[in-house]
Amino acid sequence: MANQVCQTLNSLRVFRQGLKISPPHAAETQRLREDEGELVAAPYAMENLFEPLRAIQRDVYTVVQDIEREMAASARTTAQAFLVSRQNVLTAALIAVGIALLLGYSLSSSLIWPVRRIVQALGIVAGGNFDARVTVPNRDELSELANNVNVASERLGNLYGKVEAQRVELEAEYARSEALLYNLLPEDIAARLKVEPSGTIADKLPQVAILFADIVDFTPRAAKLPPVDVVAFLNKIFSAFDSLAEKHGLGKVKTIGDAYMAAAGMPNPCNDPVHRVAEMALDVQITVAQMSPDFAKGLQIRIGLHAGPVVAGVIGNRKPFYDVWGDTVNSASRMESNGEPGRIQVTSAVM
View 1 (cartoon, one colour):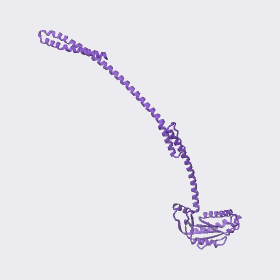
View 2 (spheres, helix red, strand yellow; view 1 turned 135 degrees about the vertical axis):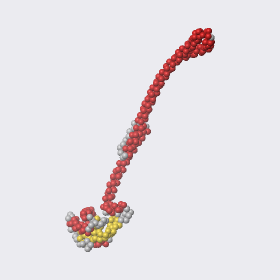
View 3 (cartoon, helix red, strand yellow; view 1 turned 120 degrees about the vertical axis):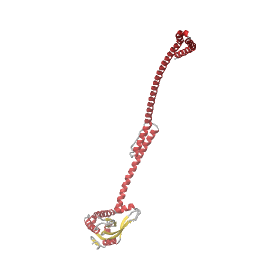
């Protein structure tokens, strides 16, 4: 490249020198053209004049060709350098992308995946499965967080087990309470009492049939037996009366000592309540006659029946009791107390 520059400079110096001698040659040529006697010599003079210019032209053409070749070579070199640079840039970009992917995978493995595992475990625990556990290989804050999640899941599982056991016990206790409530009170009355615990339940019923049944001479019999035998006998006979009341659609009102009271038509009206209590009274006599003679030998029952309007309601808060009042109840009680053993005494309202 340096040699080419030197050659170009030399050619330019020669060209300048040629330009300096051009004016005299041009003037001489003009003179020859104007001198008619010397006209023949003009071409030779012009040839001598332009010979240096031709040499300069040839030198300039050579220089231009050299410059063109140099520029072409430089262009090829530049293009090749560009291709190499582009290849280097692409290679560097691919390496950078690979490093980024590697770093991303490493970051995902060490951070994102553990977090996802922890989130999945928490979702399972939130769904009610307390057996979910999560394992994080990293021994850092994420691993500690995963261990805390596992501990919390285990504790929640234990707590849920205790709560579930208590829930089962509460349901069983609630069922026993419900059964006891429905044993103490008619179903409809118990439902009303649950809706309005502090309300007053009092109903006037136009037609109710009352049955009173009393065991004749029970007190002197009971005095001769141990208390457990007395209670066992009363439980046996009154349980039999309960079954008869359910059979005929009567509601047990209460027991008073050795007396049993039931009613038809309360708390809800029913068809033919008098017929119901009459059939139960007959079945009571049959049941007593068929009982074991150990304690029931010679046992007799007095029964009194009456029908009419009554007032019924719930008395008491801690031990609520559904009772019935009115002349109908008093009349049925007098029919029983003034009746004869083994007989059923009724009023005209029952006949």
